[in-house]
Length: 147
Length: 143
Image (cartoon, rainbow over all chains, first blue to last red; front, side, top):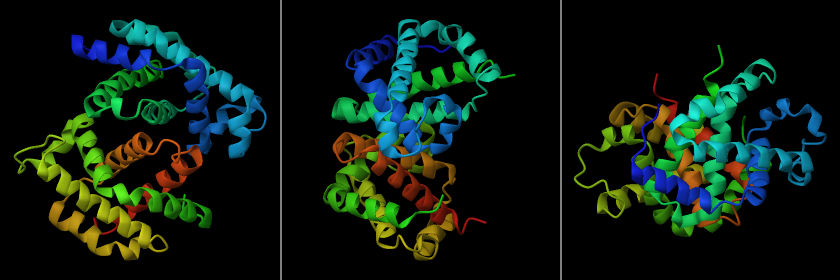
């Protein structure tokens, strides 16, 4: 289990409070598909995601971005059991969806960068450090059921 | 994942906007790297002050971005163009090349913080590819 100080808990909540899932979720998902195009392999049912314009206008991409951030909300609310929060999601991504767990790391980087665009200097170095610690715990938890 | 002509054009155009703030980008990126990845502090044990406002961090941030600028200028042949820098990192500094990825991420974060409107997904992917190519060029002389 990851240990969190009081300061870290309040930092993560403060960052999360500033994020609008409906606004930022779509940006993050679009960024992953544009910056790391090999991740397109997991979204065969999304239709056209093969050009930048198509990705940015694709409603299924936007919807999935909101799904991802909604799941992240569960982790923010249950920071002492992130592994528990993601156990079944992890199993699903391995057994049914066959997603390479390195993808979770790529997604985490896009989350950090999208947040940086939105929060700008309020995502100062210490805040970034705490937020990336949280995302590492999420990535570990999402990779935990791959065996 | 080599740079297309379009990638190079995007990188050059973005650099034209960002290079005026190179010193700020460099010291911010370095500060974030030291804060978020404390293992990188091992390369700076000879510095008295690793805080973001320190003179050493600011100076070194400027040095780093001069290297990035050199990469932009020599974008058509990074491996040959950055040979001397590669030798410096390989033989003198002996920085584990895994750290190039870490610094690259933090440079991108700072671009996002300072120039969010310009740092679109298309610009992001071109810069990510460029920094990866730069990192490969810096690793060239290691072994």
